[in-house]
Length: 209
Image (cartoon, rainbow, N blue to C red; front, side, top):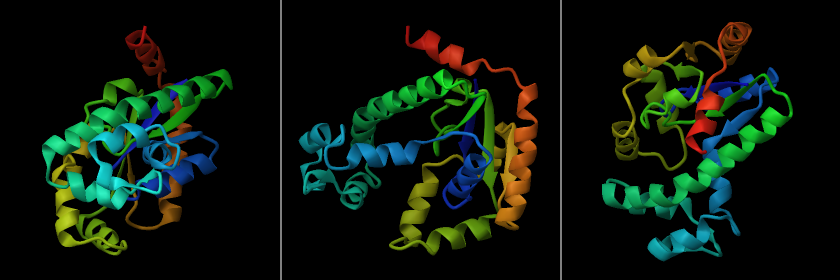
């Protein structure tokens, strides 16, 4: 089973691209959605986070806005957060891969925002980077509710520059023109996946045995 890592900086159109891959029949694991599930009432991350970030727990769930403010520009707090959440999210991803492999899927999409920042490209067979111009990126992000210039630049400072991501990509989806144009690019990428050897899943299994 081929593991396709889908990534891209904030505002690049990665989430829409994931939807387009899914529309073409490729199962998608959404790393952000998995974390959302961990933060919901009854989620596996609520209890351990309540020990270190009690003010972020509201009505039995993690308030992401409060949590975000607590770790914003605080590397030590962010590291603590990641040490709790990443193992839990990793298990969810492992379960997803096992389910899709058992179902006989030939390829899956792993939608992982910080794939390259975490130097995890060796755990996928293909890296797809979604990109657009800096002007379009900034406008998209600042149009989001609650977003500010300060928050935008803080997020960017933690992400690899788009030019470097493009260099590390096997394929680039340019989301600038339109959704239809991005969809055309994605169909072209899918048509070329059969020529790529699937090795990453075996690497992952070797690392966990």
